[in-house]
Length: 86
Image: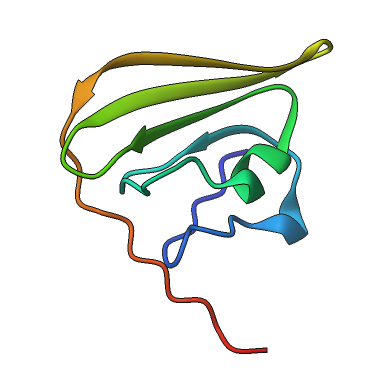
């Protein structure tokens, strides 16, 4: 089953975690820990990261922890974070 969600992706979709894969199509300055935390075992997060100089980052959760690999230079729109007030 594939579930798709559009909207503010910075915090992810914690109510439906864990995920086998998370693909992000806007670039935050840094990898949001909230997305890494939602990966299931062997799950992968693919996300562009950076401001002017962006890199595609692939993060995988393994039994030994989280492995991060920076792959290639990319250019995506910036992720704008607007968190709701509590």
